[in-house]
Image (cartoon, rainbow, N blue to C red):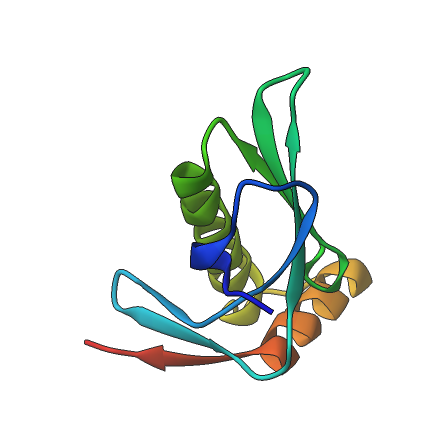
Length: 108
């Protein structure tokens, strides 16, 4: 299995999500997280889906798709996993899923 950053141009392709750093946070997957990446010739967009992370992102090129995936993960982490606010049951389930999937290290 190749890493997300090493994905080839064939489509669709199953990609293993590897750790990454965004700003001062380092995200390390705690389990194997596979992303289904495909290219839609009709729209000209790269698509990435990961049911385990409740994620569907898309972009015009692979480099931006990688950034979109990382930004999505950081957004969900900051919005749900670190909040002290009352969350709906669905939001609690999403929070718990991300807490279970990632070790997040503050690198400041």
